[in-house]
Length: 398
Image (cartoon, rainbow, N blue to C red; front, top):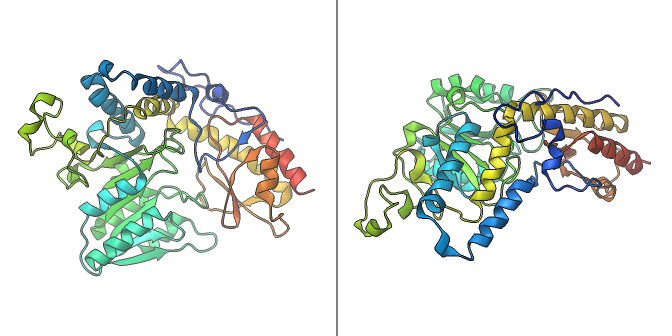
């Protein structure tokens, strides 16, 4: 088996030299050697530093008199906002803290009205949270929900490019399809959407942090990502990027902490009507997350420390090794323009019906979506995981 290209992030250390070279990042996670966890698209394991930060934050909640309004209610929030801005390639002013992707999509839906008859484009097999909300919007506004399908050999970008037209009012999609790993060139689609006067709403849960994103070139109206997968954070944490043109929009909640002057607890019943600047009005209630945000910060610092380009290169090298190991058993990547960090392996006709369980018995953990094995390596994986995957396939097909 060919060795991995170790260049994937090895040279990237810069100011974050407290992290080892990216090919040695497994040491930052509490993963037993006998487990080849290749399932970041399902749930990402939190790094040791995040677990430690979370443990400390829970212990501190036993002593609330030691809490600081400045740090615990506001400081951690702004640190998360700044780290999120780096992931989106944007500004902290454009980032809101949300509990889930569906929450962020609901914010978008509440702030994008559509004229009757305009089309909302979604992908065939798109994740449900990014479909149900648009069904509701179509009912609300008299719009038409249109599902875009790709033909064999056609990329999602090509399929969407052909679908965008004068009737398009909104494209709601991911940057990477959660089933087949197909990448969407969002920047390439933006001119056609702009010509149509269409909005762009993105669910980046399966790509943010693992694939470079540039808010300036893509120019989404809203872009959200849950943090518990590729961003390696706690469940019920998410980041929402809001374009400046929507900063005056309507939030889902009217919570007190998003109001100007809320840091002065002695004056809260002055009931200020104006909000804190930027996207802060869209922050969820109880955004300060005393237990979760310190852990999220540790995870996001790790991800931004290595950088999306280095992570994508490393994951791509791992995916190439995994694809090579799977090829002798008829498991082949079948997605045009696949994202580097995502591998959907089409199952051959003679694949065992319980293949997933057989692999799990051998210590290999991944997912099945449709007629494919979904293999999603991250920075905690290495060549030993590829070897275990190869041995597990050999045993499963014996």
